[in-house]
Image (cartoon, rainbow, N blue to C red; front, side):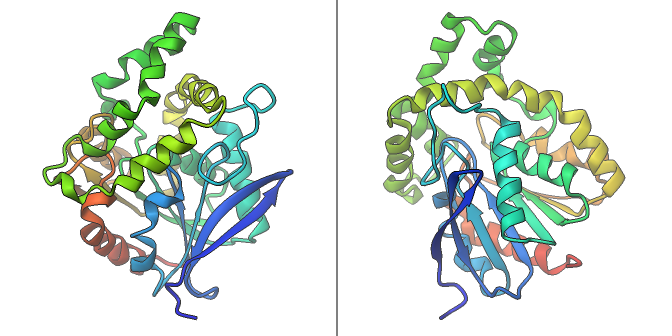
Length: 289
């Protein structure tokens, strides 16, 4: 079997199934790909073959997303701490001793929590529009920040528009000069999962809990300073949510961080996967595994 053949697998963690994509040699250095909102490991479908000839690539779906289990929001605590707990269980079950992480959007607070908890395991971090600094938060966070400060039903309901087909497409198309590069199955699949029964409620719970990620920024910064973990930021510079200043800010704590900007939006891999893939390969080859 070719090393870039992708397998589609599941792993049980504390009674819940985590779906994941895996490719590459079992003996190769590992990179863990963590997706964001509102997508799944499907967002890495074009990157995995680029990386898997040299690396073992593992891309799970977070609980509540994609093909992983999505328990009822009344019975499961949808917090970023809890999402991280299940990914921690996932890497423990796979017995991953050393690995790089690639984070995007929601995958960033999960990945940074993992790194803080497992500093001896993380060989490097690739952040693709995965924010860790308040400088990176755009004005488009205003309605979510209102919900953090006043979690009223009115403020919760105001965020439902972020789950509509129009807003999901906006995330993919904003800042993209050649819109023919955006595959329609991306936003269609995302919307399919969002439209599942009560999925909107778990997403709103996570919107509320996102405030804990911002509160943890100083903890993440301390980890960066103390570990001096190698970091590559590959950033769509027209992201409507996470500003370029958020990418540059990594250099405050990691002076050797590599920051690369691409003329595109939030889902930069949809338009620049070859260019970003080349940067990631160069970075991964430089790491001590």
